[in-house]
Image 1 (cartoon, rainbow, N blue to C red):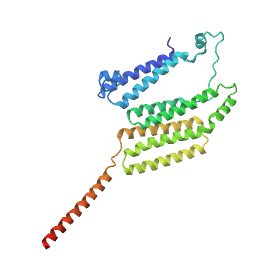
Image 2 (image 1 turned 90 degrees about the horizontal axis):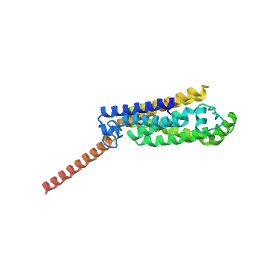
Image 3 (image 1 turned 135 degrees about the vertical axis):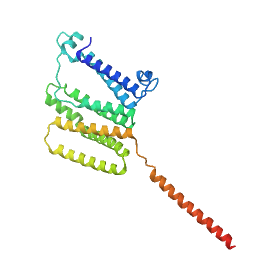
Image 4 (image 1 turned 90 degrees about the vertical axis):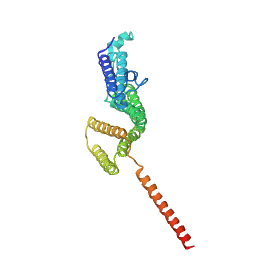
Length: 277
């Protein structure tokens, strides 16, 4: 019944759930809360517990999909649908990085639930773009038997909106991640971090555009940058925003001092007039 792949995924799901239970108990949660995922009682630290529960659910879903597809084995699928001729399985024509990008979107959703709601919107946007791109690629690879023609069809179908859509998504990731860091550090540190980030992004864009590096290397650089920005955003959001009220308080205090000085001067003037009278 269970395939080799599903056994591995189900085992990972159980291990992640047990790790979430242990982490929740050691971080201040109750036994009922950590078992019921917070439905009854506390779960301790929300960030770590939420990440482990998300890993457990993702592995569970992937394990169920693996059981239903029989690890993608053509003979097993043919026997399952009672096909007289074994089903032919067409291998993907090109590599795809939509799977890790989907994992990035799910991570943003989990972080948004535990830390800041802005990451929820980011995760929804990432998953929407990824779903569209992945669906178009899966459709285009089976339109005809010619891989080059399929690639041309894909480019014509989604090419006009692909670059603007991915560019907007990349900008949103950078802005949201770095903004959380800038809001958490001091004013001077924010200026330094923003300057270094701008130099790094501009330099990386020039190197990628001028170099002839393979697509795998470019994808690895972009992935590393996205993970680094997300990690910085998580740390900044968890640390919280710095206090912006000092300047306003000083202004109000100065205005109050001036008003008090004015009142004292008026009182002194009144006393002097009474003395003269």
